[in-house]
Amino acid sequence: MAVAEPAAEDLDAFSFEELVERLEALTAELADGGLGIERAAEAYERAQRLHAAAAARLEAVVCRIDGLGPAGPPVG
Image 1 (tube, rainbow, N blue to C red):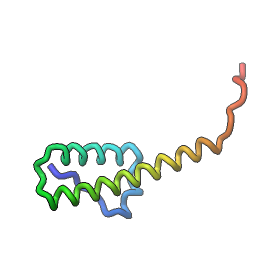
Image 2: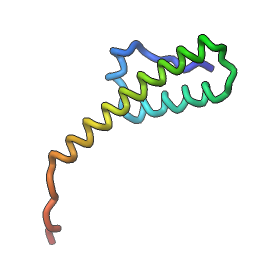
Image 3: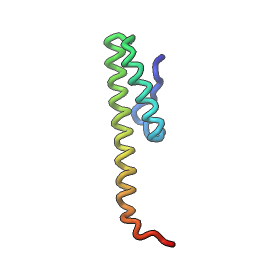
């Protein structure tokens, strides 16, 4: 079963978790080995776009967290 994927510009609409789910499904499809060479190449390209989008989303969250700075001593 092929994983439907929006155009590259639509990847921003998905959460990190949704991107990872789509990437995992696509990886499983590739691992099955049932795709022809052209379809496998297209799936690999989609996987690269999904990976890049997920990695960028993760990096943005890490930067946000790093920007919070140290939490300081616990209150109480």
